[in-house]
Image (cartoon, rainbow, N blue to C red; front, top):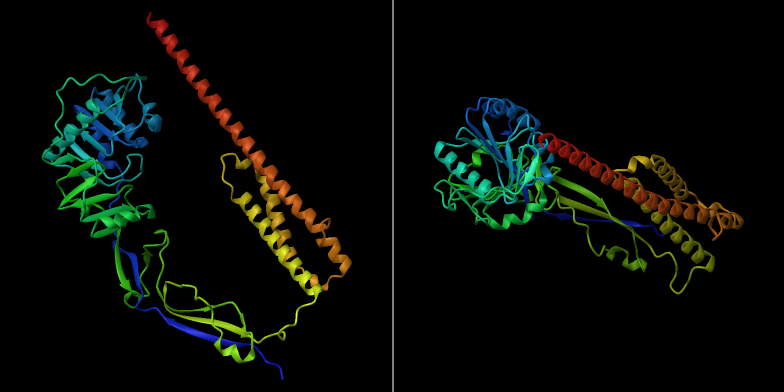
Length: 459
């Protein structure tokens, strides 16, 4: 009578397991376009102050041309000239403004004729969240604009010339204002809303209420009805101005409804999941050393399946195959070594080919033929995987799997192609980098020529 394998199961109840997760708190978006801002810019009468950490959106730049043509004075501070070249090149002798670089700038705002609007995100975005400030708050923001403009700037561009900025004609600025203060460090917060990015996870230790919002780009702190944005501490709570957000909470699995879409704290915050009531997980088959022990064979560990309230683990237990002290023949041992080595080599080739296919580079378009060949190799690997070597003769095995056989040639060709691809890609990237540098140098030389011509005209 043959002894057959038995099937065993184990059900683990996870209902009391705690889970920290984000759940939608407010579904309404507060992102808006710049239509109101653009209208205000075009209707400006005296001055426009702009502070931006990034390039301005093209619509904002276009809107500025009208007040400039009417004689409205426009002053701008940018966090980095190098990162805002598009904005710098948008203004010239035809559309002149004064632009200064202030590397310490941490906020985005616009002041039009003493009326200020603070923005939560970069002014390069298509949409933004803006807060229109009251007159007293606007006055404070004007004050801080002047502080950055006169005391914290490192470069100045007037028309198309960059130079060191002129010194401030004003006495030193006080760091204390009634409505908007400047802070060097983040204060202890009651509530923190962070962007939808797990890199900010450690900030949850600094507050009682922790949320993420897909509508902001940097953390916003709320402290005793005050708001810290960038390095501004504002005596106003702007929590309601942030639209869609997700609140961090913790519950046991039993109390999490299966219909909820949630974002587990320890996951990537990008893909929502739903807690499921139950699931099954089949484990690897185990072998019993003796027939008597078959019912007592259990896995050493059970893989954790976090998002299920109950998990049923299923595994099979095989009876002993060989009597004790009996060894397999050398032929079987050699075959198993051969099969294991082949599988490892196939895994190596798959890893090398997938690395080639997933390689990202600005010059990768030059290697479409190589990537096509890599896909063909992957198909050949699949064919090797399903070959039944047990049906081959000794001579056929030698032809295919010996050191000089078909597989060795196949293996060496892929490794050789992969090394050549890596070398060619590196060479192409260096060539592309050199071409880019040459173009930049040519542009600079052309610019110098134009400046020299202009100087000669003036003299």
